[in-house]
Amino acid sequence: MRTTDLFEDSLADALRGSGLTLLRGFALPLGRAWLEDLERVTNAAPFRHMMTPGGQRMSAAMTNCGTAGWVTDRTGYRYDRLDPDSGRPWPAMPDSFATLARRAAAEAGFEAFEPDACLINCYLPGARMSLHRDRDERDYAAPIVSVSLGLPATFLWGGLERVDRPRRIPLAHGDVVVWGGPARLAFHGVAPLADGCHETLGRRRINLTLRRAL
Ligand code: MD3
Ligand code: FE
Image 1: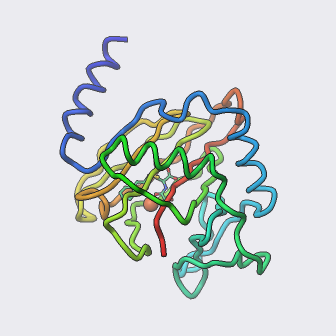
Image 2: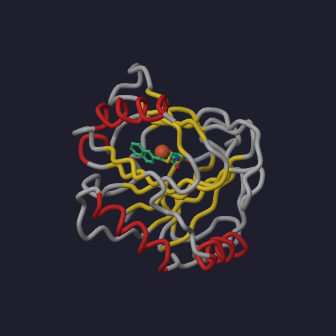
């Protein structure tokens, strides 16, 4: 559709040189094996609504795989090698996840990206993520690769200051975003998820972020 093309063209202009690379449909087609890997991880380490240091439950449910996982509780945010719910290490990162992340990072100009952490967010209709920066990782030189699955969402991309008005970027099933360089410490969030039903994932959105944490 022509209006879509115009939107995508002006978005591409805004993204040029920003450090944010949008790879539409890069994760398509997702092999069956890929979704089975995801299910294996979420069976071993089920989604849970973590507590923020301020005492609020997060509206997106989360889990992790990899050497380290991102966690929040009353004491703060951190990467932890153990799942606090089970006391065991997080499930290993499936090769299929690391391979996709490496290919996407290379496409965006980041060679030799080796993720050691994968945060998996699950949004039901109404769930959101408020504006924040990802700054619990040790080395900001590594990019973050995000894979969107299931229901579409509106991604909010702010500037380097909290007050910068965020740009709204629609993300659909299979879209991959790579953030690095000047965009690495940008404020970002997710608008409340609209209701709907995705043909393979049902009434939810799942987002994976592959990171170099340790
Ligand atoms: C921009 N997740 O888990 S991923 C998060 O869709 C998170 O679930 C969102 O923000 C989600 O921390 C957005 C895209 C993303 C990830 C990291 C970024 C965007 C970013 C780091 C810097 C700038
Ligand atoms: Fe984030």
